[in-house]
Length: 627
Image (cartoon, rainbow, N blue to C red; front, side, top):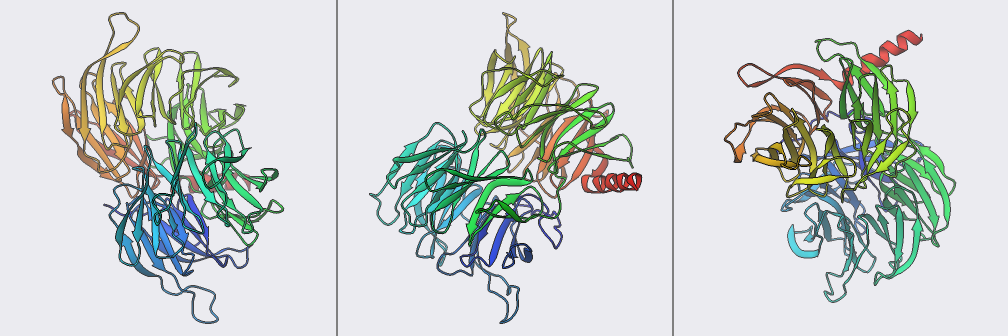
């Protein structure tokens, strides 16, 4: 397993902040990040958080939790399938820093990415929940496995432990489970009609708050009966944390807001900052910490809704690409779109501010481009980046866009397929939704292909769609070529590629040949097709940092193994076919490669670009013009 190498600077993270956790005394804050590191911050002066010490994993870090008994012990959970336990002493007497961190143990027997952790009240045992749906118990003194606390049918997303040892877990299957590892008979389960991604016991341990993808927070008794239902937002509620006296709770939602309620569910405040990534919230000593798409945490006074501290710098991590009038457009975490000519070795780039929220999806129609954002809004801009139209919030982030026929189609985190007028961006209709986030949309025939976290790939128009095939796990991307070939990339570590023909009735499609492509060791994030649609060359990028190539032929079916073409310093983010022989490939390390299919049927890297360097040059050019 390769190690992330994003080379963060001394003042923050080099990628978005995934989790935040205050030390029990409130003087230190731990933050984790997609850059594979954990930062310890001195927050004794809330308006001036100061980074102190950095810890490292091999992959992105999903969660951090301080020990309730030994406040200098921190657990960190990672997509490298490990949980590390560290001792982080304060510095010498009178010093304001930290001592040298000591790695106490590594829990390395997890079978999938670890999403969250929570300490048992004894301070020795740790509950870990992971992408494979398992909640497992570990003794951190010995590293011994203590058994399963719960099992979910889909990704287990969060765990919280009450003061007397009740373990609550929630997952994308909509199940809320409460178990007691020390008293196996004390269990309760409840299913809700939505994915559940966050939970937190009140400090007294009498009330469990859960956050649902339909924007609702439920307050539950210990037996999971509903005490109160609170509508937070039109988009998913993601994280929740209680004030220390349980008089209020704070909720992070996908609308880019921190919502504060009293214990009876009455709204107190709403704090909006689209730079916040509210998948994580923590509260301590009258301060709330929130994750961020920028390089550090947000600190807020939840009693007055006053920002106390903000991160200093954005990231230009690439999430999506489109081609417009010969320029490659790159949608970034910073809410900007970078534009440059991919056919030159030293292009002059332009940086176009589109939104204050990360750009997750892009498409273009010849004169204009469309950008879908984490805030759930679609923007229509001309080639100069001038805003021409904008949608109302669509109720969830927009990770996919597709221009097909006389409409623009937007795919959302909650599975919606939304038709939009290409000029006004007025909503024209909603098609049959997926049962999960629509990760990818591409034109196909007179309709479009869609890929989603419900494991399916579908074809057709907005209202008449047919499932083409399913994967063993969520589908990250779909690509098409020549109106006949379709390829899909999945978290099950495979690429499926098929050749299609029109059905006899002329209304649907039939798969006449299909193959499964192997090679990546981790989730396959993106895919592209090159060459002849009857026997295309397949390119795919993975979270294992690799770019892979497969050749197909007219006789091929079954399993095939690919060749590693290139390695990035982080996962491969997205791809865009520039034409039938060239593909742009972007990694979360900021690299963009132009890969070309040569006459011998081999793919070669022709050009390399760095998003950070291009963005810096574009900013310098803009400042020079302004001055």
